[in-house]
Length: 438
Image (cartoon, rainbow, N blue to C red; front, side, top):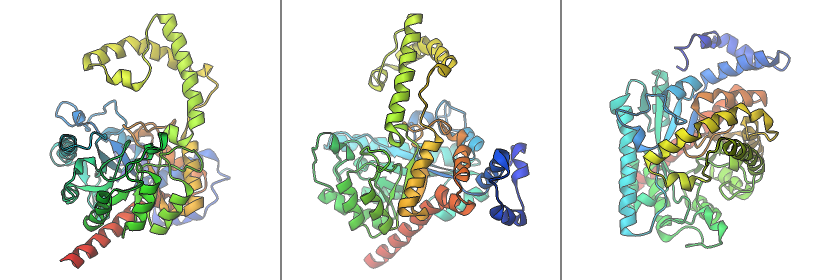
């Protein structure tokens, strides 16, 4: 049970009788304190589930691991502090060459991440976190007072050309998989084809069509978050099971290729699937984020010049550094960062925040209904917004949902119920297909 080790939460463990009364009460007249108290109670009772958290194998060693409060956005201490019950840890592989060498390297990368997740839950911290393979596992592990890890596969590139690897990845714990990432894979065109209008397949490849059937057979949810629109529409037409989008927002509110447009969303509803709204600044509100980043950048440049410090721009330059160079650079710019933090009140532009994020949830609920909307952060993969910038701030999302008037039942669906329902349906259909093939 969440927060039982923290006395501040004890007043909010309510009786069934009080719960029933709370659902009927008018909280609008009680002020912010009453609203927050109600939200804390709801946050305690529902299962909170985030479908997309990237990992680095270097954070799964005896010396450095998720039992520690690392500088990343998701780890066990941060999950406990914020009341995040379930983290989908992502086996991500960036898109490389469509060659035997590329597939072999991608496979090795994926297996290293699978093994890292299993090491954490089965060897390092089995008393704190357990791997769930079904919705029943999720509820059982939460009831046992532990956190939950689930395993996702971002980009099917590591499958290579051997379609049987899909069953292997399922046996390793993978419960959803996207057929491409940023750039076209052997299975599907990526949304990034919109940049230059260059496509490999005009949707799914022949191997991608086979992959859809194989994922249906072995109970892996099909993830729509990175493939192209045509790939996604074809996937939904072909799939016998509901699909999901693990970390996407509404294109109707913010027109970027990583978001799903209304046609895709209506097809997802018809399919019985779920879209996990993503807390990624540039997907939520591109213009607002751009204006804020420009303002912060200008202040940073001014301060750096005053201090005589050269500040690099762009992730690529930072990634090109050796570990030693990165450490030296971070020490050099730390005084700049501290000065920027101290002078943030000089900036008029506002950061993308939890309210902007829940605007997308509202839009999606209005368009496709409460049963088809969920939550994701893309933490440690570029996600994070003001107010929910790591797992320790998870409660703020529930608070904003309560502020918007969502009931406890609706919040439970958005946080986990809808996604777990889709997983149940996918696994039930997989069992039917396996019985047909036996």
